[in-house]
Amino acid sequence: MPSAEELDATDPLRAKRQQFHLPPGTIYLDGNSLGPMPLAARERAREVVEQQWAADLITSWNQHAWIDLPETVGEKIAPLLGAGPGQVICCDSISVNLFKLLAAALRLNPGRNRILSQQDNFPTDLYVSQGLSQLLGHENCELVTVAKNEIESALGEDIAVLLLTQVNFRSGYAHDIQRMTELAHAKGILVVWDLAHSAGVMPLELDRWNVDFAVGCGYKYLNGGPGAPAFLYAAKTHQGELHQPIAGWMGHQNPFAFDSEYQASGDIKQFLAGTPPILSMSVLDAALSVYSDIAIDDVREKSLGLADFFALRVAQAPELSSLKLASPLDHDQRGGQLAYEHDHAYAICQALIAEGVIADFRSPNILRFGFSPLYLSYQDIAVATARLGKILATEQFLQPEFNRKNKVT
Ligand SMILES: *Cc1c(COP(=O)(O)O)cnc(C)c1O
Image (tube, helix red, strand yellow):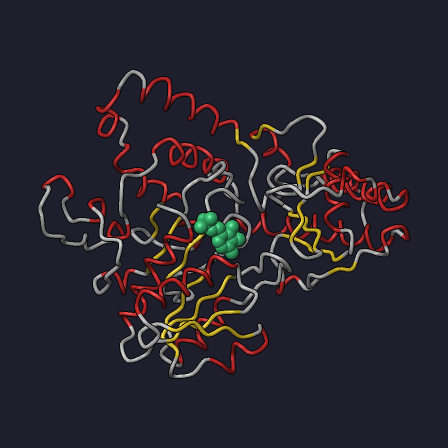
């Protein structure tokens, strides 16, 4: 294995780090949860607040094209998803976008009422399905969940929609989107993919894989800032036949005609509901510029490289033998993160943060490390694993201050 210095010297993305603000002394292994701040994002925030809003006021909707931002940002995200034009829009949160898409997909597949998902899917995906089921009645919408290895056999002709998250938020296991989509389509099932832990780190080919619908996050690998709006993908082939239930004025064919009858826009804008959050959407727009001159394959390769380097150092350190890897090491089966189980995962995570290495904890016993390759170096990984080793060797995580639970973990 080459040294961290050697790996950094040949890293094609090493200069990208300069486009981020990273607090000195911090090694950030949590960009899969909240990406750090691109310098361009801060600049845009200032411009939007101090110039556009403060000085240009309402004229900014036209003058600074605020009204087009959901589409502009959607089109910037599209290449990262392998999506051609007119199919991605930036709006709302994943939760709200799932509600819109699941309702639309159920209507598109009449005679079937089931949404099939995975037991350990991200909870919001399951909650939104349960909420929709309560609203529509079980005869029209029923959520069925199975374990990961039972999905294929559950793909029957009673299923209307397959709802899966590509990269599991705990284990980092990654589904083969193309394969699962093909299997679902063979049974007449529509697919909705949650790309929260994929967009910006996994190479995606939604058009080529014939994906029907997808959603994803703006604030994780895309670095759009806390609570950044999400995105939604709807394949062009379906756009003429959809009915999404949050029929708001921004999704109308002609919002400024102020008609009293709703007429959905015929294109991807039909998924808009209310006024876009211009401050946060502008910041996400600027943040996406860091992707403008890099190849997603390089991003993926480095993310895997950083994680492999991390896993190897953990495996070779006797003081880290109590950490149990809970992610697949096979590149075809994993996303951009690694999970380790430990009975004291929460306290270890807190002790690590106190040492300047930010990772996160996922209940009940998972220590999660994200390898966002735009600003991390192999040296960072070497330092992080050394600090982790020291914390475990000295058992400093047992101190009471590291064992008090915070509201957000
Ligand atoms: C982070 C995350 C979400 C977040 O949903 P929001 O409604 O945008 O808060 C959804 N799904 C998955 C898989 C996630 O990891």
